Length: 172
Image (tube, rainbow, N blue to C red):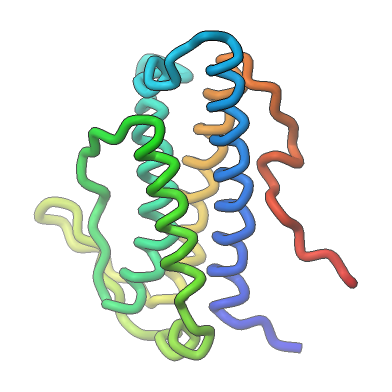
């Protein structure tokens, strides 16, 4: 059985976005239970030279749904600075999931081997759509999802690996 570009990217994005949605919800419940305003953690960083929680969630949404849209369109740019509050970050994740759920496998599979340009400032980085998704968007997505998870763990949110994994594609 051949594995398609859609199977490798969209289904993986959706699985972990489900986990992200869940751990953001768990985080919100934890903060409310502790009497903490969830917006207080938006600028939390794992290390001073790392970008904050807000950026991590914006970026994981951008690299998943935005990465697929970029592959389809032939171009991708970094996310714009965002001012979302905690609820706004949850909405971004929900919107990313909805965007990906609307992508048809044949639509994404049709761009395999097509050019995608990643533009950052004046710099243009050429990719093929499959290389872009597999070597750029997916690794960035996992990095930012993991970092957001780790920040919540650092803040005492009771999470485990299963919370990150989302709904696995187990055999029936």
